[in-house]
View (cartoon, helix red, strand yellow):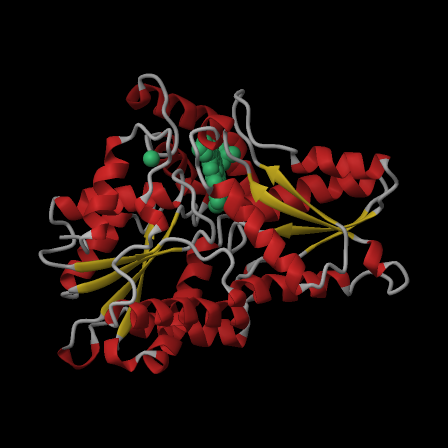
Length: 389
Ligand SMILES: C=CC1=C(C)c2cc3[nH]c(cc4nc(cc5[nH]c(cc1n2)c(C)c5CCC(=O)O)C(CCC(=O)O)=C4C)c(C)c3C=C
Ligand SMILES: [Fe+2]
Ligand SMILES: [Fe+2]
């Protein structure tokens, strides 16, 4: 996938402003940090093994018997296949580049939308790839950050994604890695924010425009999200509900112009995961004579192997072999509508927080999953609810 060749002049100018933002804070005032939390991905093929090792070692994502020993074995076993996939999508994951770009655009807008807390500075904190949370903490400490917003880049909340990132931030803060006395607040979910919904809807409309006008309204919109093990769903994780809410909001925005389904992709391992699986759904639609489909990634905001490899190279190819005309809605990547949404979400949070309308965390973040037995989740929620003090 020619990711690099799609870089536009706008991208380059945003990347330049990101570089500027990563220099010393302006006017000696310590910046308001907007910490963009996500899982990350290997920027180069060579980083794949470490990415997988970090992922399989994460007890907040998955619990393995003898995890310290099992994780290196699983990572080593899975590395060649995943390396091959990153090779085929252009030599690595574009997530860091897109996150930096989105962060630069967001903070530039934020300085105008909420000058009271300017300058704002975007920091990237990835859970499994560089820059890891520890490195981000060192940078924030060096910049003298005293006010920080932990802003999840997963639109919908899951304990295995945003929950894991918050637990990691909490652990590192507790041992002083971010410095003393940082005041934290959290943006933990935004899956129905109108700006996010609008940006997804616009990309769907662009994909629909590729079909003949005569049959355009018959095209099936197949929303696809990373699946979740049923063990996680069954302990009360809110992700499935929140992804469904995003899909409902997008369909409302589109005026229910097309039939649609929400399906689930990328399950790993032998246990039961949330279904129906995306690949099976495509085959089923072909069997039913539904030969026009738009695939819509709904739970991740930039390209990654799930879109560039699994959807584009595996499923779309297979679907075409079944006679389906399939187009994928672009990931949000450089979407100016989406970048504006990120800025609006943060500005609203800062306004509501400084006026006392909301506390450091949302009401919803305070509730643990009814089946949660991970003690860190409870401690983390209490700590963030006190503003990280
Ligand atoms: C919101 C999205 C995601 C959820 C929820 C999620 C849960 C989850 N994932 C695993 C295991 C793996 N995930 C892997 C890669 C991966 N996961 C997501 C997103 C979610 N995961 C993305 C976007 C990616 C790809 C990153 C990229 O750069 O492209 C992998 C590694 C790849 C592989 O080996 O197939 C694993 C393993 C679990 C167990 C889980 C819920 C508990
Ligand atoms: Fe995953
Ligand atoms: Fe939990």
